Image 1 (cartoon, rainbow, N blue to C red):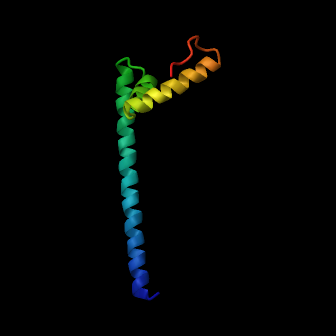
Image 2: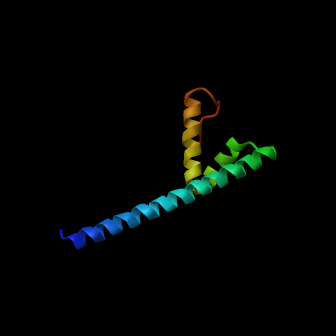
Image 3: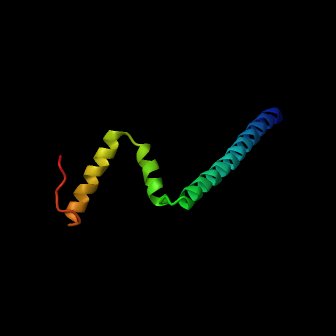
Length: 88
């Protein structure tokens, strides 16, 4: 590879690294903001563990949630933790 090609590759590499570093910093800032919102919710009396579960559930479509609930019920029934077997 010529020096010019090395220079281009080096410049591209540097650009990628700098973009990633900027995005990582933005990600940290957003994560800090999210943490602050959870703290605010907690101070208002909301259970943050449940709030996180609600947010995770909202990311899934209804069919996916139903399938997971059925599997969970199947496991809980198998362990004797619930009486009613899951309905297919």
